[in-house]
Length: 389
Image (tube, rainbow, N blue to C red; front, side, top):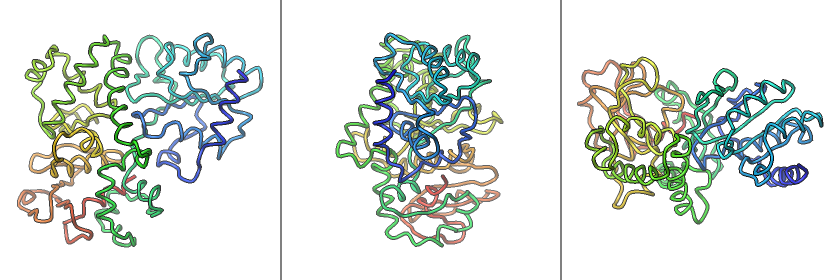
C-alpha cells in the first residue's frame, strides 16, 4: 500500500491545474460513489487528479490505477477496508475496467463502508447494470467527451470564451468576442484538436493506437465477446470510414464482416459507446437513443483525418463536427427536410454558397455555413457551435 501512496503523490505533483475540462464543474463531488465514463484519451485521469489537488486534502485520499501490479495479488475491497482503518475517506480508482470484478467489488465497498466516498473512471463501454452487481441505483454517472472547440481555444491558444447555450449561439453572442483568425484555428481543431494530447508530436500514432485497443480489446472484453470479434469490429469501422455519413444496411454489413444480422445493432452500439462512431436517430423513440438510426458518422473530425485513406470529404467533416459538438448539451435528431433537428429548430450545414431552399418549409430553420466568421439573418458560422460546452 505504501508504494501505491508514493505513486499517487508523484502523479499529484506532476498534475497541471492550469486548465479544467467542462465536466469539472458539472460533477457533484459530494456523492458517495461517482463514475466518470469516456473514450480513451479524453482526460479522465487528469480530471480526477486535478480535483484532488485543487479541492481536497491529499492525506485524506488514495488514488490508484486498477491496472497496477498491486492488484494482481490484492483486492479493491480489501484495500478499501485498509483505507477506512487509516481514517481515509476518499478512494479514487482509475481505469476500473481493467479490474476483473470491478462491478461486484464496488457494490460491496458501497454497502460495507458508508464512511468511504468512491470516484472511479472507466471506458465509455462500461455497463453499470451488467450482471448481478447492479450499480445503476448507487453510482452517479458522468460522461466526459473530447475537447470542444471552445476548450481547444482556451487550452492551446489562451483564448477564453464562456460556455454558450444554443440560444446564445443563435442570437449571435459569439460576435461579441474578439477571436482572431477563428477559421485558421478551426481548421487545425478539425484535424487534431478534439483530444487533449493533440499537441503531442506522435499524436497520429497515439490516436491510431487508441482506435486499435478500443476495437481489439475494450469492446470484446466489456461485451463478453471472443477476442476474434476485434478483427470484425476493425473491418466494420473500415467500411464505415469509406461510407460516412450513411444509413446502415444491417444485412449487407453483416455479410461483409461475416457476422449475424441480428447482432449488428448491438455491434454498432458498442462501437458508438466506445467513442468511435455516432449514430443519428430520428425522434420517434421519444427518449434519447431509442429512435431509428438514420445516419452513421465517425465520432469526431479527428477520426476522419486519422482513418481516411484519401482526402477527407468536406461535407462529412461539417456534419460530423456539428453533431459531435451539439450532442453534449442537446438532444440532436435527424430532420425530414434537412440535416439535423434540435427541438423545434432545423439546421442545414454547408459551405459558403449554401442556399436556403431546403429550409423553406422549416418552422425555424438555420443555415450553418463553413468558411464564414459572422452571421447574417438565419445564416450562422459552423465554428460557433463548438462553443456549446
